[in-house]
Amino acid sequence: MSSYDYDLFVIGGGSGGVRSARVAASLGKKVAIAEEYRYGGTCVIRGCVPKKLFVYASQYHEHFEDAAGYGWTVGESTFDWKKLIAAKDKEIARLEGLYRKGLDNAKADILDTRAELVDAHTVRLAKTGKTVTADRIVIAVGGAPNHHSALPGHEFCISSNEAFHLDELPKSILIAGGGYIAVEFANIFHGLGVKTTLIYRGAEILSRFDQDMRQGLHEAMVGKGIQILCHDIIEEVTKTDQGLQACTKKGERLDVDVVMLALGRDPNTKGLGLEAAGVRTNERGAIVVDDYSRTSVPNIYALGDVTDRVQLTPVAIHEAMCFIETEYKNNPTKPDHDLIATAVFSQPEIGTVGLSEEEAGRRYKELEVYRAQFRPMKATLSGRNEKMIMKLIVNAEDRKVVGAHILGHDAGEMAQLLGITLKAGCTKDDFDRTMAVHPTASEELVTMYSPSYRVVGGKRV
Image 1 (cartoon, rainbow, N blue to C red):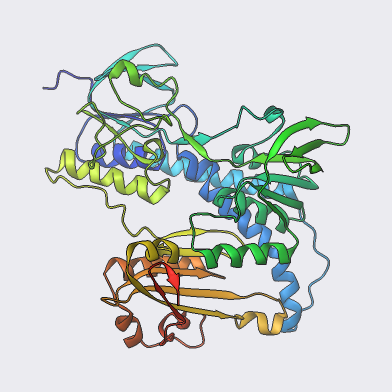
Image 2 (tube, one colour):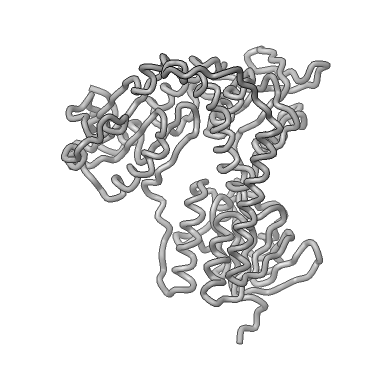
């Protein structure tokens, strides 16, 4: 018999935490999981899922416009923000119920409380002050928006968390940031009829993405009417009789209803008791782990965003399954963070896997770059001025495809399938041997037979 109350105690009810707890409990382990807010974590409650629902909502005005080119007459349309919020809340509640049901069916103890470490094997439950012990502990508490507290007037601003619960749809919004959260919300609010401005300190939005994707999206967003201010930052936000005024470093004074800060996310480790347990963190507060997600304390693991490795929901789930294999199936398994397909649900979308042209140019002596830019078929009758860009990055030495990037409708869906292809190590010759599906946009991926240009020593030739 174990001398501990639990075989496994999980702190955090997000994707990684719930998967760890549910699977361990289904293997017959005595498991408890504690969550201080709602089960489902950032992704389900105030992240990926409600964001994607908002993306769908924001696209309808273009669908109505496009219908005319195909012979449809669409009557006057109106949008009700409160109805969207209510429908979103209902769906999120349903999903949270499924998370709880899965844990309950696996016979895990579900605790609605904050949990903090006392030592390497002891956890204190904040709601009651009770302490429990566990043989192994998993920390999967995720991250939280950086509120940029050094900014004068930051208390008047919202983060992505509050964007999902605004009482009224603003008439105007200023979004600070150039990452995927800022870019996605800029497109969402613009699509819902909000006058939208994006401000970013860098030279181009989405700095970690391929240059063609960044520039193509930037042009598309500006073409839709979104104002993008690069090489600038907000220096102060003040309240006015009309709403808010943001003053920028370049001297701009922007009067808006809402200012949203999307300036990165921080690991959610404050007040967690990590020091008392001996768990080491880095300068950003992220928990330091080894290749197996083990912390500096051998019986304590950390998964997902709290480790600041790759901040994606599927990655946290994958890390959880590797933990299960390692600790409960006698099969030591390292999480594989290589060639992760991802998407930016902007409008148009970006789907990408592997290396950007810039990254690949630094890694390989010579590249072949295959690039196609075209007007998608749907736009021919709708009259919409939009373009798709598809790009394959190939290592010239062995013809292996090391990067694939798409800007356009359903780019995220295509990126998932390209992820399998690149993971399998396919070469450009494999792409060339593959028959096209016609007429589709994705057929361009297998019909680009000649390189658009080469990159030698990091320079296009």
